[in-house]
Length: 308
Image (cartoon, rainbow, N blue to C red; front, side, top):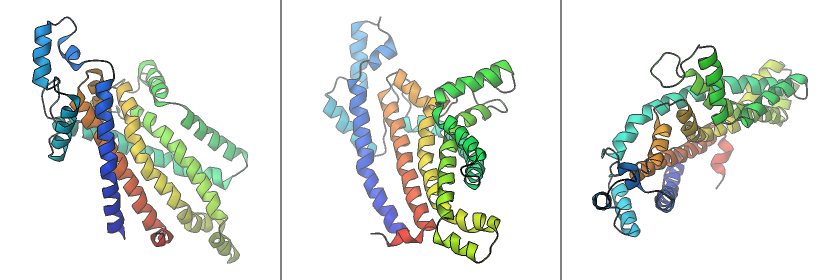
């Protein structure tokens, strides 16, 4: 069952990734700006500009460049960066550990915040504790990363001096980026945990457990928690892809040397091959996150295995 679904999803991912690669390629070539200007400057001589354009293959028709790009992808050649001429894959592989570190800490922080908050809100549904918890969650969802990051930086790094302003070389440098990235995810998960826990408590299984005289603590944590885990875990897996997308903003704010910052730098310098490679990696991570969500849903809820 798991193997068949995994193969189906992997085959479905091929047209998705092809569409992403095609869209990114043509959008990059259609938006204003020229990588030759970024490399030589607008004051460069016309002869030098033409020579560089020919050397980079930018004088070729767009469809030829597109077909050459796709052939390279299939063959494992993602091209070279226009700036330093290094292979795109090497540049991306160098940055992935920093992004993985930031995403892992952010996800852990989100889980540690979301589950107790969701349980507390569900256990006191309709009361002031519920309103306070969901109000905190609403604030977390509403505050964008590009606003929360500088605010935390001004308060804890510039004002109080407790933590580094940016980078990842100093102790504690992970704290502010992880809070910035993990807060929104914690807010989403806590709301999902609350609604799932309440829905599980209204199911026949929990009513039966209560009829047998089990304590409320056991019903909440042994029976209802297992029923509520399916949508929460599925949402968590889906949010793993969103974390990588949010890392683009967070890494830029904190100058965190990860894949997100590399993507922004590549866009600013019109480094077409590097932008295409970064976006393709992020899209692939989204596809893997969706596949993981499907498999976790099947593992936790046997009823889904009989669908289809």
